[in-house]
Length: 405
Ligand code: ADP
Ligand code: ASP
Ligand code: MG
Image (cartoon, rainbow, N blue to C red; front, side):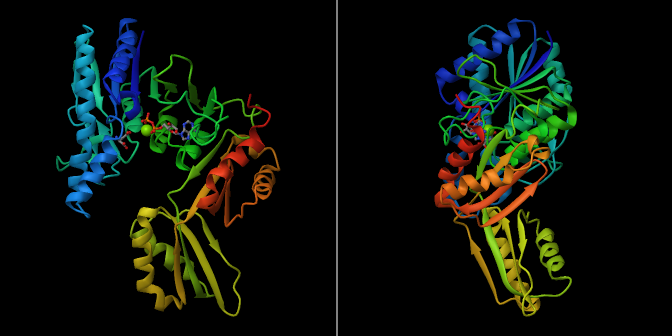
């Protein structure tokens, strides 16, 4: 008996049958004597459909109005799930993010949770209600609706688990847990029984959509007992926790991120302060830079290339065009037909040869590497997007040969 937070993603509540299925999972948990807080996402492709609808009306709507629109999807799910639970004869209350006390900053479309006012949920739990909360949304200090970024309902769930000192936070989804690669891309991907917070954070940041990266960050910070589990089959999922048995597997997973654009500044003056100027001006515009590569200076000039998310591409090129002359640059080139493929695993810290194994797999598949970046527990390469699926499969096969059935 305890307090359990259960989050159900869009595919888990996509239609009436799925909502009834979720209602059964939730009421079974409640019937065992637990307090239950449920977080729901918008049904199926609702959020994508809203984005398309908005574009039909205005190709450049304000972020504030986008958040008003997008937050509506979760409200539909929460009420339908509450009705399905009522039908099963259990006490239930659905709450929007703001009714549930979610206060965020004002970064519309990518807001961060500042605080949760516990009062209302505590009150409802005290009355023995099952509480359903709309994920992905909150209110800023001007009482305006904000959303937490795509996939943000995971973060709503983990934040509630932290705020209410939950015994367990379960993320129910449409796959069996966290796998060694996206099972939609790699047929023989295998479910992991456990993964460390740090490895999961890397995988989530590098494109594994199964958890929102901020949810993992928060789970690590508050030591949340986190399980990723299937809503469609009742079987054990993946535990995300502080430490795992790193000896068992060298690499925990392969991830792909196609939301990448590369910008190259050609023919820069080869003198101190150039990189500082470029990256400080990008930072001032809140443009996140990922992999950076600088060529060796030759004949007094050098090139700098870096990657950004595609949504930041135009803004980055625009600010660089403004300072191009003063940097002495010849040209600014932008490409977005690229993909970032990464391998993640704490095991690589103590085992040499991971990079060479990854590069060998790419060589055997005749795939050219354009840029490389490494950290303690990950190696990423940039490649042509046309090769990305083949690359994930080839790398996965090379590392997982000993583990896959
Ligand atoms: P939800 O709607 O439940 O939030 P998401 O679509 O956000 O679900 O995340 C689940 C999806 O993440 C899966 O359907 C799968 O295609 C994708 N995915 C990518 N990488 C992985 C991985 N390593 N393990 C499991 N799923 C992954
Ligand atoms: N509905 C939102 C999205 O599609 C939030 C979520 O699913 O977590 O991104
Ligand atoms: Mg999700």
